[in-house]
Image 1: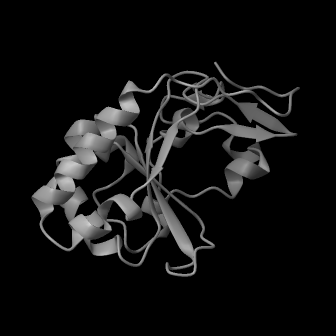
Image 2: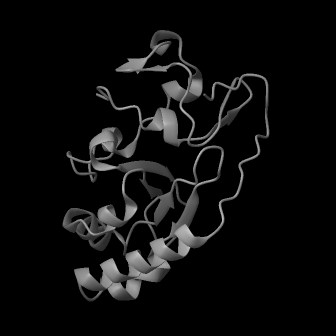
Image 3: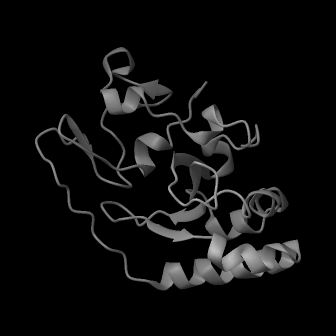
Length: 178
């Protein structure tokens, strides 16, 4: 159960004909402790489940509001990897997160067989940064946790230094961004 977690209600972008929400903006229906229109929420919200809820490989203590990690599964079409790719959206303190032993171990366990992407929030109405980890980490993953940590820290610094790119909605008419 989501409990009081509402990270997806803020971090994610929704750009569908029936509802739009800019990245980094809270949904106006998001209330303390839950969704104000939960019983009548849009289809896109009904069918979304974060990896913490849906994927057995995600540690039980990675609930997004407590861990700062929102895992988003998506279809993968790269034949060398499993059919589900994982976006590791770092919504908390990214540098602290990539230094966590459990995060490093998760990446080490999965980098060889799962397409992994590191995502960083871009800020309100800005596109998140997204970087595939596998090409950067495959060689490092064969060595040590500290090698992987060094590659992740360097990647974070590089991506945090890039100028944010505004997100432009493709659809309009039902923007619920606050």
